[in-house]
Length: 334
Image 1: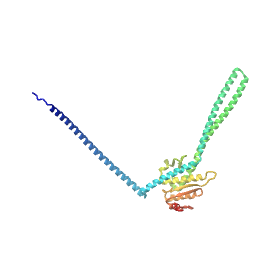
Image 2 (image 1 turned 135 degrees about the vertical axis):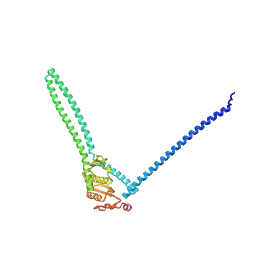
Image 3 (image 1 turned 30 degrees about the horizontal axis):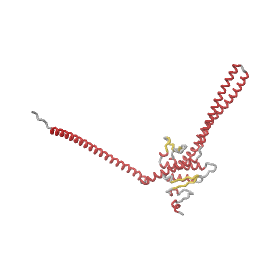
């Protein structure tokens, strides 16, 4: 006889199986957790290594920058101050250009308006020519009818009408040709007006740069009508002004101010000296070129009023006829 399993034995057997399965699941979860821990540790070591490399790279860059600044005799604080000063100078230049633009005449606007009127007149003349052509066609039709009906009187009247319409057509053609010529002349005049202002400024700037820099003078300055894009012509083609050294940029801007000031001083029915403010405009210019720039300032004494703001008054001691004032003394005076 075979032994019969009791219900309690079967229940214990099932519980044992479930316990074994749970143990296996826990072991599997433990192994997975250990694998994740190892992966996390490896990832952490990678991050720490990358962080150390980044810190080393930052240190290397900082040392290189410090070396360059030391070679120039600067500190980080001085570099920040120079950057802030350059930004302020750019803003002042932008404001000055906007002020000059608002005061300059706008002949091109008038030329554009006149060109629109001429275009409208040309369209009207062309429309009139079409109308006259239709009249001529009608007159020719009348002539054919007269010839068919053998009406001599009507033929004479038609011939007179045709002659009159042909004269009107000729006049319309002359007006159309005159309108076309006027449109061509207006376009040429508009281009000439655009260059008549920029050309003298570019020539004046180049002459001043040649005086300041001598044989090292850069190529000719090229400006657009809005003064928004300044370029210097080089052997490799035009290059933006902001790609040159700070010294070249500030000397070009200095020469541009003088040129615009002198041009405006000679405009109008009652020309008068214009005011130009120079706020340490030549801080990156060496002593020789600074002396040549001072010569340009002295040469414009009769046509310009020049106000120089500087933290280095000794650089301007050689200016002839210059009046100096200490702003701190002026502020403290009653």
